[in-house]
Each structure stands twice: as C-alpha cells, then as structure tokens.
Length: 510
Image (cartoon, rainbow, N blue to C red; front, side):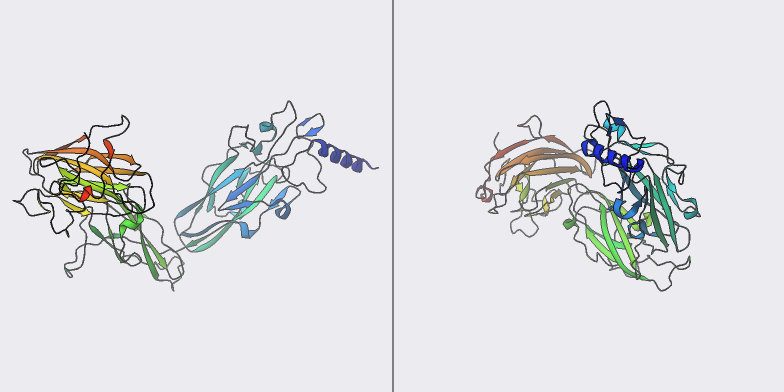
C-alpha cells in the first residue's frame, strides 16, 4: 500500500466515525491539517453561502474546483438599468449555514466560524473588486472592508446571527454605457475559499418625471385645479405630469419617447386604504384622487419610455400636501375589518343623549345630504350648514372613513358614539374602531376601542363648544368615563336595528 492510499483509507475510516461535513467534498479532497481535532475527530468546516436578489451562490458541484468558485454570468449581481449620474445599491448577505457538533472540549461556534479575510495566495482582498475589472471604479463597497469578518454558524447555541450583510453600490457615469466587474470573497471555507461573482450594470438616460398639483389656468378657467393651501378631507386633488420628458444627448437613444404615466400614493395618514383614493386618470399625465382623511400625503409619478425604462424616484417626481380640516368640528371614524359595518353618531346633548334619536343624533338615517328629513338642530340656519351637522361620508362596509362635520358650531355639548351595526352578513369579526376629533383644524382626540359583538355601542368622547372672542368660538374634548382602566370611553351592547329606527332611539346605559 502506498503512503497516499494509506492516508486516504485512514481518513475515510475516521470520517465514518466522527466527521460531519456541511457539503459534499471533492472526491479526492483530504482533510485540512489545520482544522481543530479532538480524539482523531475532524470538526465540521464553516460554509460560505452568498445571497442577493433572491439568488444563492455558489453551487459547490457546478461552480467550484479546488476551493475556487467562479459564479456564471447568469447568476451575476445585476444592478439592471440605473439612470446616468445616479446611484443604486444592492444588499449582499453572507451566511454560514454549517451545523457543527464538535467533540467534547471544543466550542463549535468558534471552531466552525466563517472568517472572511485577505488571502495573499489569491487576490489579497478579503472582500473587494478585482482592480482590473472595475476601472474606473463605478462599483464599490458602501463601507470599507474591515478584516476579519466573522460569521457564526447556524447552531442555535451560538447566540450571534449566522449572517452578515454588505452593501454594494454602483455610481452611473454621465453617459449611457455598460459596466462589469468581479466581486471577490476570500474565506476559510475549505471548499469555497475563493468565490468570484460577476457584477454588472447599465447606465441609461432615464425619462424624467415632473409632478405637481394642477394649477389654475386663466386661459381655461373651467379646468379643474387644486390650491395647495386649501385641501380639505373629502376634496378631490388634481395632479399634472405634463412637464415630464425624455432627455436627449448623453448617449440616449433618440428613438425613445414617453409612453406611459403612473401615479401612486406612497404616504398617507393611518386609516386610509388604497381603495379610498378613487383615482381618475391614474395612468395619464393629468390625474386626480379623492382625499379621505386629514393628514400628510405623498404622491409619486412614474414615467415610462418606449424602451421600457422608468423614471427615477426624485423629489421632482413627488407631490407632498396636507389635508386640513376647515370645519369647526370634524369627527372621523375608521376601522380595521373589510366587510362589517360600523356607524358614526354625533348627538346634540342639549336635546337628548340617546343614540339614534330622530332629531338629536346625526347619523346615517337622517344626516346624509340625500335624506328626506335631515336633522336640523338650529332652524335659524340652513340644514347641513353653519351650526347644523352633516354626514359627509357613510361607509356601509369596509374600512371607512365615516365623517361628520359642523362648520360653525353653536355653544353646547355634543357626544360621539360608534355603533357596530347588526347586519345579516354572516361574516363577523372583532373590530378595532378609531375615532378622531378635530377642533378648528387641530387634532384634539384620537383613540381606539375593540368591539367584539354586533349591537355594541362605544361612547367615546364629549365635545364642549363655547363662545369666546374668536370668530368660531372654541372647543374642548373630554373622554367619556371609562368602563376599563386601560381603555377610553365605555362600551355597552343592545342597540338593535329596530331601536335605531325609532323616534326616541336608545338610551346609552349610565
């Protein structure tokens, strides 16, 4: 028997009794003489696994030979198209999925840790780009590599995370051009000690999206427009993207032209849902959306050219605006279940405190603009205006909002209730209801309660309005006395649909 054959036979015997590898070794691989040993047992080796853009590399069988792994071009770190003079970033994760079961006396978390460090026998980079592949340096690490980078194994007893992340950046030059480089990662994984991954990007001249609120056009006075200083919930806001364009020069393809527009809400107040916005012209240069709730909104325009390239997300592509309550009292309600029905009630306590009272309570039955006998608290003012309430929005199912407003409140006391409507819909679910009260445009109250049964009523808050030296007067809010020290207001059950159709309504329990 030769010396080599004898060593190989000994290794096979030892591996059967004590070796635990994280992957299949090369058929002729010998154990690393530097690996920790105990009683003749080899400790499992660390494993380098690299993930990005949903891809995991390298494949030991397909990409690696003698510890060097070359990832093919179809699994490259691909930045895709990046606008000229702009930057893009991709997050690359290094994992160590090795499962180590070291012999007694050895710490598997240390013995099996993955260490990324410079390898003088190869590129001596640790992590970096081959110099000759990255000229003139458009690819780079977001932060300089500091060695050694240690990644603990996936063993549940190791405590530390079994992955580390690094960000790669591409800085596109000022002209359309293609760029390639090779990322090198050097580690103590015996089967993947060197991994080379292609990196690529295309610098292109992207279309430019220019978004704005549509301003008043004196040459076309009937055209819709939006004053940014006077946007109220329930308003429709109008947008203009006609200044968007496809640049020329800088190596641009002169055959490209703008082909499509798309508007989207990227920031909105809590309680809104995409269905609330009721877009018109969502994919056109002129567009509009409905504003359901007060608060901050950010809308973005994306322009696409005939080559399929989309505009970058820049400040010029965004419109930011605030929806402000202009009424003296504005009450908003929304909830978190898509199909049940929650109803908002505002009761004038000087007349009655009963919920669903025909003349004291403003709610879906008597406060909509189309209701025949609308509630009319103050006969000296027109119905639904001045000191009289109006139900701006009734949502019979969904998330809301429901909105009740009083433009110029009279002095007096008002109470906000919500009611879990006892519909025949078999779908029933616990629902968290949120109530907001705005006084002269300022949020004065916001609380939520869980309603878990139909017919439940939540007495949320009382509003006291007084005459003072101001034009509208002023108001204050007092939460209804609680039945739960951890919650605001009181919840009681028993308001049926029959009681909610009676003249006197339902007396909320004291």
